[in-house]
Amino acid sequence: MREKRASRRIVFVANGALLYQNQRFPCHVENISPHGALVGLDEADCEAVRQGERCVLVLPLGGDAPPAQVPAQVIHNGFGLIGLRFAESDAALESVLAAIVERAAREETATGRDSSRLYARLGINTDRSRWR
Image (cartoon, rainbow, N blue to C red; front, side, top):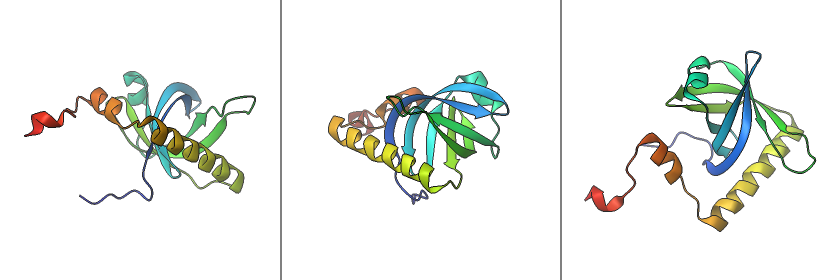
């Protein structure tokens, strides 16, 4: 199966919030790219968020910097996970997103992180010795 994403997702573990229809849902960012992100929410909160709807992902930047507010569209949801496609943004927000993705890529390379935590959450067996 051919990958359809414009750029690869980088493991990015961070707490954030999803603003959706005047509600604020705490979320946990699983991975991110310049074009979207996968976030985890409480199952009940996930069911409240509808595919195709607009929302805002709030990402802490650390230090004294105010959090980034990234407009997005819900592409898919289920199993406590929401897939987001970032909406077009201004140059300043694109610069912030690029810095977040760059930092996440450096951390992923330095720590050797992969998506195994996400696979475990979804019940996907990643023990390759059992695949034979």
